[in-house]
Amino acid sequence: MTYWTTDITIVRIDDTDLGLTITAATAHVGKVVQCYLAGELACWQSTCDGQVQFLLPQAGPNDPILLLAVEAGDERTDYFQDAFAGAARCGNRLTVTLRRDLLDGKAPTDKWRIFRGDAGASQADILIHESPIFPAGQGATGWGFAWGDGGWGLSGSGAPGWGATWGWTWGFGIDYLRFVSDPLERGLYPIRVEIVDAHGNVSPAFEAIAGVDGYAAPAADLAVASYDPTTDTLVLSMTPSKDI
Image (spheres, rainbow, N blue to C red):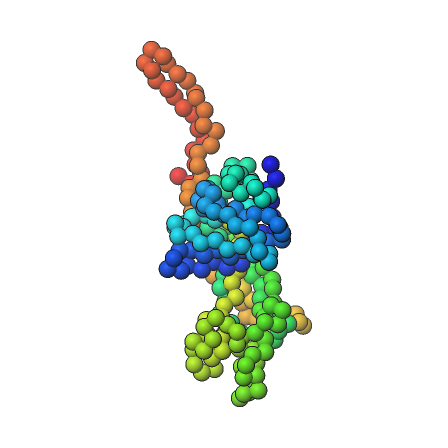
């Protein structure tokens, strides 16, 4: 069996009237990406220009979503138990969203950085994401660049929702940066988000505590402890779930 769990990143999650839409980027050209919802093989799609997109109308708010790349022709094979042995103890992912209209005046070379801590920790000291706030310069110079004081030059004029808010934020509308983490165990995670420029200057940080919930980890090591044929009594043993 051949499959890959790496080089697949969920870049966007949209909650629409039709259901949850998952967009992911992948380096596995020519492969098929499977989507597992709450441990079940829900759907699959061939990659196109390094991306796949799934519509999950049946997704619940606490359902873990895991993606797996497989060879074409193996898309109907369920690899969940082999590929995601630890998935039963994983809950939801963290989603960090940043409105670009809050970044008015930032430069194309500026980056946003996201840190998190371990579950239950007090400090967010693990760097989990760093990328330009205007990827490849997108939105860094927009329509209306020369108007007024030039604030529209950073207005992300191609944003979906362009013009949704009138005034100094016009041009951003509902343009967002979004990051979705890998699956995490249940718990409370400290989060810190900051902007850093090309000279290393760091903005005041936004900090919060994010709760990750999900299904309880299943019991393990289920086995037959004993059987009494005279009373037809079967006794099972197991390691209880740590979450119950």
